[in-house]
Image 1 (spheres, rainbow, N blue to C red):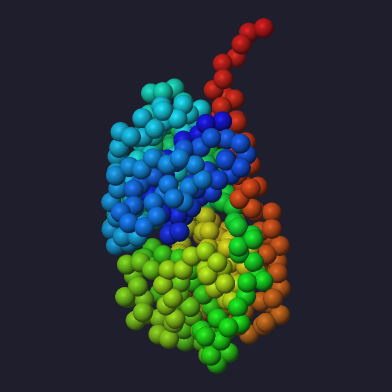
Image 2 (spheres, rainbow, N blue to C red):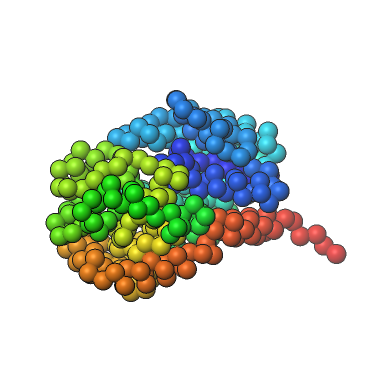
Length: 375
């Protein structure tokens, strides 16, 4: 099977859309298929072609406002040419909004099926950044995804949102996790002593530091005795958060094995964003054997079993976050039980398993497009 994967943003170490796109490409190669990635160009450092396991076509891009590490693709005619030259059987559109629309139109002109993967809650972002525009964002989402042969939603909550807003032909496709890189055995006592020299309980957040993530909700956790808050990531909200979270350790952006050591060295992982269509960092914390506190909204509803692998709290409720962390801080046995159950829960969620499910979705779409030959 020859597949063109069009991703709106890059690079994968700071962007979930690109990370999922490259994991998909790797799995397709592993299974003997022939992918091509179309991705935004990066101005410096390793480009997408240095990170991907397959050929890459770069298109012009701009930095994401307030977060220049992430590049967002501009509309480009190179998409049509790339799809045609690759002789694609199917077009995979990762979070289509601008470049993906070009990919969708190209697929239609070439008579190819398109699978659109929904990954970004643009309606929630519109509420956060502009206070208005949610309805317009959903009109755009609906018009784009309605043109696809199939839309894949990463969580039950995202699937319900799409169906409620009139998007047709939606199925569930979650995300995988690297259960080798992220595992409890990477707990690092030297790192723990450096972060908590007085033996404090380590409560961590990992992710982009941006308004829609509401990391300021950890302020109450910073006030708990014997607790040290660790923040991993960067973004436009960092200056504000360094003031809002007194005593917290800000480690900046970390990736790869270093990030895995940080995850495994935490005692509790706390996520605060209410607009997650999936929430990969929650799954990585679970793979690391760490109990999770997360909002009872969006992707975490599928990931966190309340009272078994962690605690779900009302979204945007700082007191609830603080109280949940306090409960876990007071009971090491409960933390250990939740962490072990969390690891067990994700054991089967490898990228290989999730990738095979995606290939099944591809096969269904291709099968529906094949003409029926009369006997």
